[in-house]
Amino acid sequence: MEPATSQGNSTAIPIAIVAGFAMIALAIYLTSGRSTSSDVPELQPVATDSGVVQPGEVEPVDASDYILGNPNAEILIVEYSDYDCAFCKDFHSTLHQIMDEYGVTGRVAWVYRQFPIGQLHPNSPKISEAALCVGEIGGNNAFWSFTDQIFDGRDIEELTNVTKLPEYAVTAGVNKDEYIRCMDEGRQKAAVDQSVEVGFNLGIRGTPYTVLMVGNDQATLTGAESYETLKGIIENLLSQLNGTFDPATANTDGTTAQ
Image 1 (cartoon, one colour):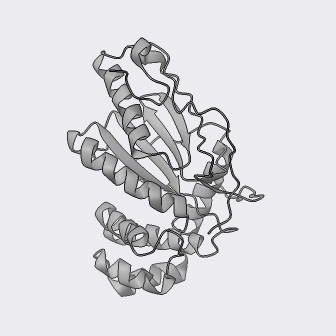
Image 2 (tube, helix red, strand yellow):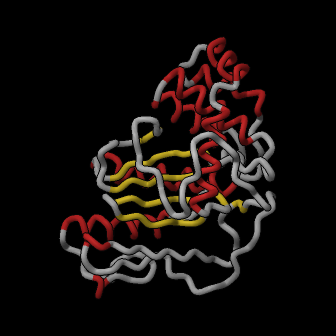
């Protein structure tokens, strides 16, 4: 079992939505009596030439991101994740369920960003580099195929078998020699380091860490929320977009009272 700091038994209020779509304020407080994220021990920002992102400032989604679904979706689920995090494996399955239901409508999309916690999972930074090398060579679909293979290829409490990474890359449609060259040259190391720096300055201290983006409005989920809770949050957001949301009927778990 990977080490993680328990979040205790504070009151659970997964989502609160302020009336009026233009001023969506989502306050999400996660608790379940167990930790649902892999926490960072004494992580320091990684120095890069890109400058420091101010706390709370989430970089907008752009062409450099790896996106599952419609890039112009109204609701963007931006996930910062660690490939060797047990909670991330669990949440990866949850987000696939969400995309199976809502991605087909074009209104919800999933964005994957790197936040490997090397102090807990020594191989994670290299796995992130591998994923970005696959994406560089093979594009968006290859990246997602590789990512799915990583999470599907291990049990929840296991670490990734890094000897299989070239095999995963080939299965994703990438030339093995090109992949090895990218890794040997360290072409994606700076990108991984920058993603960690940006995440740290956002306040990320554990994975998975998710930012829900609707236009200029943002909210965070800390930890591996359940499918039911995340579905309720999305339903409430969609009802606001449709102009049918009534805060008087919204439950504290994000669902709507019947």
